[in-house]
Image (cartoon, rainbow, N blue to C red; front, side, top):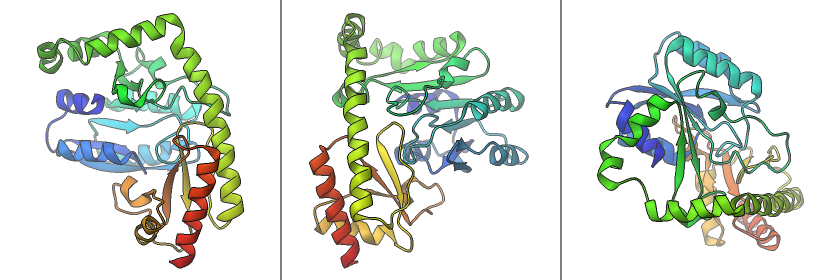
Length: 289
């Protein structure tokens, strides 16, 4: 909803935007709904590659750059501090908006904490998106935006919010109580402990049953991003479903319809025992393929 609202207020059909390659597949669908031209920017283990961004800025002037700076979906990578500062600097220099999808920022299990891009809202045109769905309850479908005062005023006076009196005001009141009571902080700590153990379970299961898979152990977020060399994961997915296991193929996260050797696995929805069962089924489907 946050990205859709931003696109509605700040873009017109045909506008050009930059995204990470790969990026969240539903974000690509929202951008397509608004008829925006999407240009991919290379990523690596430290997130968005600034040199790739600078090269594209020589030829294009994007309306915004959409990034997932912490525990990226799907790769799990985190944008380094040095690159965050450079991105903010380039935003000012080239006059584009940075849309920072920071919904996994609080789900940091294993690495040193890093400032969100929301910390830079007074230094450049940053709009940070966050969600209670990841840190409190998935069914809430409630989140928040952070930006400078001028941008926030534009949001709260938009026709959508004005006509509805806000987004989900009843649920917002409940969440406010949870925050003020300390319940949100306690829940985040509980999630971090539980999800951290599930990362270990998936890593162990992958080592035992899928040693050919290449991946970096995620430090936070929801996902493992696996490369399975010389395998078309679209075909693997068809076979895997007959073994009652599923995943997202890398193609869905590519604006160029590439990354066919990659898959995204979620570890947060399942117990350690279920995770191992799922990896065994994935191995069986790969063997049959």
